[in-house]
Length: 150
Ligand SMILES: [Zn+2]
Image (cartoon, rainbow, N blue to C red; front, side, top):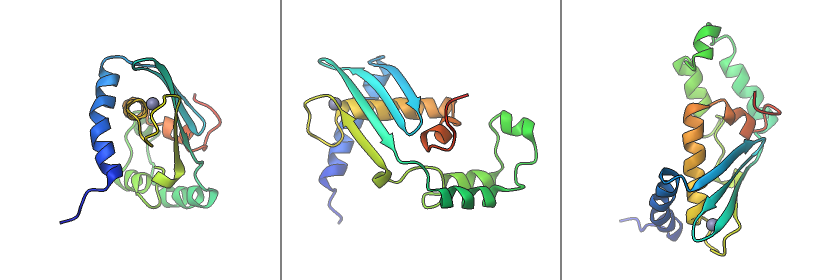
C-alpha cells in the first residue's frame, strides 16, 4: 500500500475549508492578471492570497498552435466556447497543453500559516477554478499568451 504524502494529506485537509470559503463569499476581489491570480480572503482576519504562474514556454506554445492549426473550422462554434475534441485534448494535455505543472506555480499568502497551502490559498484556487469554468479564455492570460483580458 502506498502511503499518502504529508503534502497530499495537508491538501486533503484544507481543500474543504477552501471550498466553504468560496461558497460563503469569503473570497473577495479575485483578480486574474497576466501570470497572476490574487484575491483577498476573509478568515479570522483579511488575508491576501497570490498565485503566480510561469508563462508558457514559447516552444510549447508554437507546438500547441501547430497541433491545433486548421482544426478550428467554425468561428461561431469557437465563440460559443465549443472546441473540437482533438483541440481540447491538445490544450488540456498534462505534458504539452496549457495547464501549468506544479513546479510552474508559486503560492503566497499574507497569513501566518507556514503551510505551503493554507486554507486561504485553497480558497483562491477554488475561486479561480470557478472563474475558469465561466471564462476559460483567462487561461491564455494566466499563461502570458495575451497581454490583458478582453
Ligand atoms: Zn493563508
